[in-house]
Amino acid sequence: MGAVLGLALGAAFVLAGCGRPAEPVSRSGFLLNTFVTVTLYDTENENILDGCMELCREYEGLLSRTIETSEVYQINHRPAGTREMEVSGETAEVIEKGLYYSQLSGGAFDITVEPLSSLWDFTAQEPQVPDGEEIRENLPKVGYERIAVSGDRILFSDDETRIDLGAIAKGYIADRMKDYLMEQGVESAIINLGGNVLCLGKNPNGQPFRIGLQRPYAGYSETVGTVRVENMSVVSSGVYERHFEKDGVNYHHILNPSTGYPYENGLTAVSILSTQSVDGDGLSTACFSLGLEKGMELLDSLDNAWGVFITDDGQLHYSAGMEQWMMAE
Image (cartoon, rainbow, N blue to C red; front, side, top):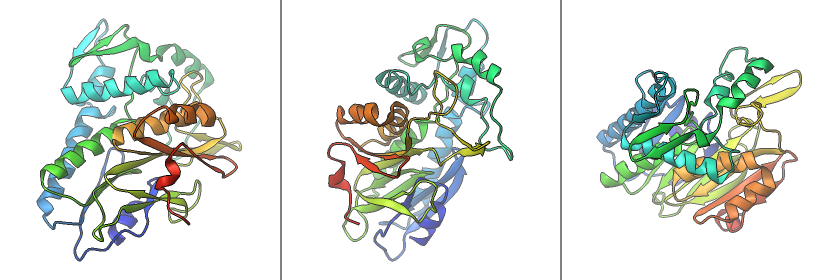
């Protein structure tokens, strides 16, 4: 567990008190612009770890918006006049899922936000607020209605639409990595994609894994609660993940597509427990973007997904049924 906990730094979760097998095996690497860690508890076959990490690398090669050979990069740099492009089934599936949550949230979450998100560099040594005129010029380029999926073809209504799958791709990739592990006969594992935590099966003691939800702005060992997780995923979106402060204002990476600036809606974090990690990924951003009341209403209308909303006064708000998964503190 020490290796997993140490490599969870920078993620939205800490692993809290999982069982301790004799010899767990783990592999980690910097992929998807984050630290990726896979730990197996019921096998010492490191070839499985190698295959799992290679699968993650292959999906990054498809879905990254910065790798020039990726399909997303090719979409965003298509020749003028291009109104459709053929992509792999996997890329089409992720885009279609992103469009689903864009529509479900009424555009509060929008995968075509790339013209705006590319203006913000939260990883710079000295991050800066983009020029207001630049933001205003790029606002009209955003709108999920401008793009559609038909089989393996992506359809565009204009030349300016560009996509950013960063808010949903990790969840999709985690699900595919889980599928791979199951095909290899693994029954107990944790996949941690920099805050997207997916637990396969139970811990070696035969109990659900325990995932601690990080306290916003605190150290990674400080939690606000612990979730029991078995064959499910926990994903969090928060204002403390990628952010910087300028003139007393905290600027974070969850952008409002209608303004081009980070959301200011009284929330500091949303954590989603779901059976599919891709849904948790999309919902954590969508529910955060909608705010407490509308985000809770959306989550309560769905099956197989539950959440914890943390407001800026430190209060925790649970969606219907979420408390059944929480452990008593």
